[in-house]
Image 1 (cartoon, rainbow, N blue to C red):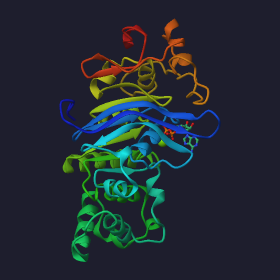
Image 2 (image 1 turned 180 degrees about the horizontal axis):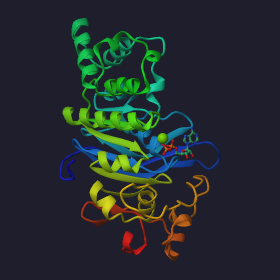
Image 3 (image 1 turned 60 degrees about the vertical axis):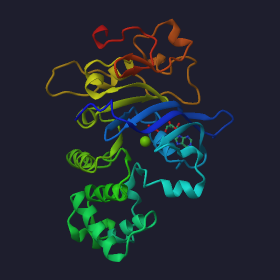
Image 4 (image 1 turned 90 degrees about the vertical axis):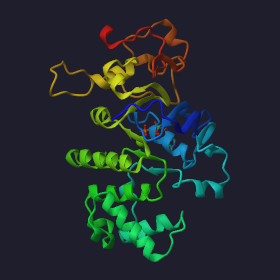
Length: 330
Ligand SMILES: Nc1ncnc2c1ncn2[C@@H]1O[C@H](COP(=O)(O)OP(=O)(O)O)[C@@H](O)[C@H]1O
Ligand SMILES: [Mg+2]
């Protein structure tokens, strides 16, 4: 893993805001979300369930379904703002420039279609395939790349294990060599041993192809091992973003500190920390920092003013009012 924060950005997300119009007051599931994804890096996007990770991913590809809608912001890739593309151009742009492995992707494979046909359709829908032979060869290449035997092409999804189905989804996502893949909890439906294998093979593939990846998840242990940088989300906002080694050694945001402290360790003996409370109700957020009700370090200003994400050190950004929120002070 390398620290690539000096590389060029392949994707710039700016002030991305998503509303779910479910009542008179919308649920703001992504709130002024801004971050860059650098060429070739793996950026982790972490946070408890319901904090807006999938919403952000879907919005980045403009794949949100009603009642969700992008209420503001931009997503720039190769000088193009995805939010401004017309529908036909958008279909053309996706998969070539940004591909998504959606949450639960492996369960979305068509149960009555052989793997080969599913891969062929995905490729043919977005690219000039250069004829049957070339398409067959490309499918063979893709299966090999994700570590599946060649005869998998003739099988149906139900004949594959969970890990194998997930590898097929990875093959689909990288089929057109996009510079950026977003993988939304790609391993969470798998058992623990397979999880690690699939995640490692995903990283190997992205390194081989030289593509960047946003890896969404909540397993901080896996994130520490697999990512170059990590963005921490809470209540639809980015609370902290930093290179992985810095984030784990010196997390600034009390929420990041709690996420890290709640990971059980077999190497370091430490008291088991119970992570108090749950994610907030997005329709009824407190007026200041959304984490304030759960924050052990909250001060008066936290109750009244929402902190902006600001530079707190080289390459480290945090949205917190508490000065020097270093873990040693807990
Ligand atoms: N279809 C929907 N209708 C209304 N609200 C939704 C819908 N999908 C998601 N949300 C809201 O958006 C929040 C974030 O959801 P999601 O992006 O799936 O979180 P995560 O992926 O981090 O678990 C949820 O807590 C929920 O309040
Ligand atoms: Mg999700």
